[in-house]
Image 1 (spheres, helix red, strand yellow):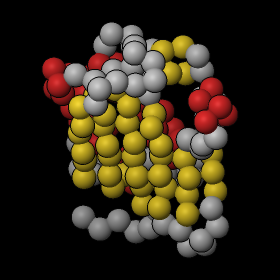
Image 2 (cartoon, rainbow, N blue to C red):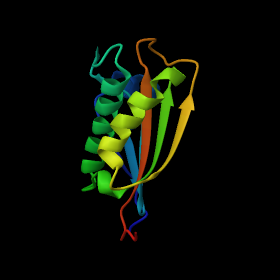
Image 3 (cartoon, rainbow, N blue to C red):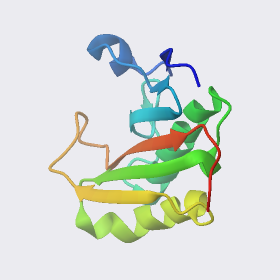
Image 4 (cartoon, helix red, strand yellow):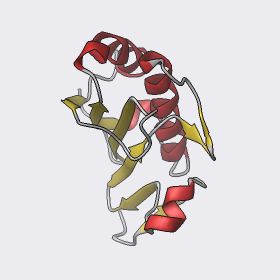
Length: 133
C-alpha cells in the first residue's frame, strides 16, 4: 500500500474548530477518531447509552466506507463512557456491529465529554490488508 495520507471529514462542527479529521488512512491502517452520536449540531439518543453507542459506531463505520472498508475490517475499538452503569447497553450495541468480527476492544469510564449530554464516544481502527482469522 502507498504511504500517502488521506483524510476524511464528516462535517462535525468540532472538526473545523479543533482542526482534526474524522478518519485518516496511511498504509494499511485507517483510524477513526472520537465519534459520538452527534449528526451536525443534533445529538441523537439523548439519555440513551445504547442508542448513542449504536449511532456513534454506525458513524465510525460510515467513515471507514470512504476507504472501501466496513465493520469486517475493524481490528480495534475503544469505547469511552461517562457511567459504568452503561457498560451492558454499550456492550450490546458493540456486539451488534462486531460479534462476528471480534476486534480487540478497550472500554473506559471517563469523567465527561465536551457536551454533558454525551454518554458515549467511540474510536475504531481498521486494517486494509488481507485479514487472517
